[in-house]
Structures are given as C-alpha cells and as structure tokens.
Length: 356
Image 1 (cartoon, rainbow, N blue to C red):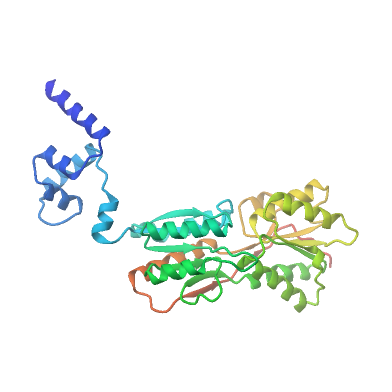
Image 2 (spheres, one colour):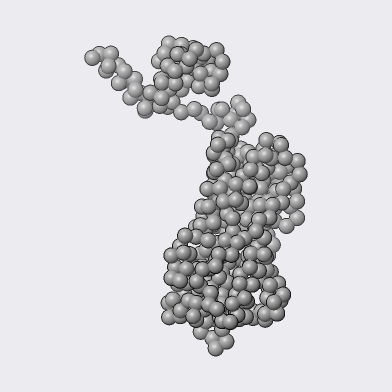
C-alpha cells in the first residue's frame, strides 16, 4: 500500500510539473543520455530499455521541448499560413489540401487571418519571421492605392525563408513562386454560358477592389463581353461588396431600376449567398427573373432551390501544389521559381434560364 501511495504521489507531482528527460532518467535509475537517445530513436539503447523509457515517458506525461529541439537542429518544421479572410470557405478547402502534403512530412502550420487588412498582414509577417517559421504560404493583400507588403516578403526571401503565393500574387515579385487560378478564363466560361443561353444584359458583383483575383475577374468579364459584342453597363458592376449590406443594397438598387440586367455573375462564395438571399427577399424568381452564375463551389450551392450554376476552382489542388513547391524550396531541391496557373470548371445546374 505504501509503495502504491508513493507511485501516486510521484505521478501527481509530474502532472503538476512538466516532466523532463532527467525525471524519466530518475524514475528508471538510468542516465539522461540514454533517455535522450531512446526518445530521439538514436543508437545504443536496447529494445527492452527503449520500451521501458517510452512507457515511463507516457506515464509521466512527458512532452518534448520543441523550442530546444529546433535550437539544436535549426529546424522548426513550422509553416506560416496567411489567409485573407478565414470566413471564406475557399480557405477551409485550401488548408485541407496543404495538410495532405505537410502532415506526412511532420510539418505544422500556423494560421494568420488578416481579414483583408494590409497593416494586420504586416504585423503577422514580422511575427512569423521572428518565430522562425521555415516557410510562408500567403494570399497577399493589396489596397486600391497599390500598397502592399512586398518589402517584407523580399526580406523573408533574403533570410532564405521560402515564400509561395497562392490564389493571389503581387506584381513584380518574380523571385517568389505562385499557384493561382486563370481568373480571366474562369469568368469567360461564365459569360459564354450566359451568352449561349441568350443573355446579353450582364452584371457582376465584385468583392474588394485592388485584390489581384478581383481585378483579374473584372478584366476577364470586360474582355469576354467585348469579345462577344456584349455591351458593358458600368451601372451593373457592383464594387467593394465586402459585407452583406454593401453587396445587397446596391444590388437591390440595380434590380429595381427600369433598365436592369437579366443575369448576374458572382465572384466568391460569400457573394453567391448574398445575391440569392437578396433576390429572394425582393420577391424575384431564379432563374425566371434573374439568372445567376456563382463563383466557387460549396455544397450549399447544390442545396439552393434551384441549384446554383457555379465556376469551380480546384482549391485543394492549389493547396497541394503550393505546399509541395514550398517544401521543395525548403529542402533546396527546386531551382527555378514556379508559376503554376490552374483552370476553372463550369458546373451547369439550374440557375440560368434559356432565353433562346
């Protein structure tokens, strides 16, 4: 009974105090170096002793000191992940994609949500550099005035910390690899689909102006309309729809006017939902009164009545490729910088009426 009481007392002590290698060595009456070799899967420890050490480590709730380990190896196996807005379902799929590459290699990632805030992004980049990440995956922000954090990303490269842009890029940064979507081709598919169904009065709802993806989608929209001899009505281009109010109010105004579009193209999943909700609130029917082509493909788009025609980007592939490029640059196995551009796919459902 007394021995059991002593064991329980020691366990309570280790629960309150963070167990160390010395604690495990004392528990087994062996040298700390033997414990260290066993825990790091090093040589010189018999299988039976190694098993006893691992059992003791688990019993004492031993957790390795990753900071000390990284100081010794100069490797943190940590990636910084900068996302522009964590509320966007795009980033959930993207993270799922990168994890399939990073996790098997023992890498973890720290998520930094900048909320489309240039200053917040600056703070996070500095924080990641200070905390020794081995690489950075980032969807960089940029204001309408052109301000961005390119200097800090260049500083990361100067420190031999690889950076990979995904979804967006910053112009003039050829020394940074990127994985993006062909946004112009993506919007062209939507415009072509509407034109093939007889629609020529087209509007578009844009998220924040100045962002690379949004500027590219607007250019794609205008280029496609010009190619197909469709007049571009600037009144039907709704800009800076960054929240529900700033998206729905101007859309209501456009749809209440005497001259209004017969089809609308969205530019992200958040706007897909806002557009559908606004149209329903106004008592209009989809697609009889207004056809809609969404952007991004979320399971909700199939549950909407009618199911929403959308432009799907290969988000998980973007994540997998970006993570693969980053790890190859960390390993030093990649020479030239990669500029990968993927294609989108149009998913035809029931939200576009046929006028011809």
